[in-house]
Image (cartoon, rainbow, N blue to C red; front, side):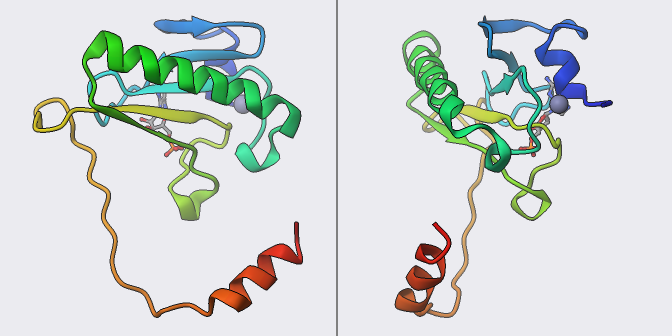
Length: 137
Ligand code: 5GP
Ligand code: ZN
């Protein structure tokens, strides 16, 4: 399969590596949203988090925690956003599961360009939503 993140994760394409073990490689995002914006790339291909083996997800998020903590200590970040976009509708542009770790810098717009926007939606029927989800767990 011609997947750029498979090639980066497995070292076929060289990249600055912040952390590596048997399952994951952590690199910088080529188009960072903030100073230090990193990506955790599993070495095994999965289209998104929704397809990744559940028993291996814990390890990915242990690494996310470790990198986030190191960003606070080492970069002086004031917080981090840890997120995984699943599917094009959610903003996923590379179809290989990856976790963004985005350090946040309060009051330093020169280092932090992330803007999270929301707008109002029609107030949902929470009971119907809960039923629709619970029936599919
Ligand atoms: P997504 O929108 O799929 O959640 O995020 C994909 C991210 O991968 C984007 O932030 C984009 O900048 C980054 N990206 C895409 N191609 C490459 C690449 O070849 N190298 C690196 N380091 N990052 C990439
Ligand atoms: Zn892949």
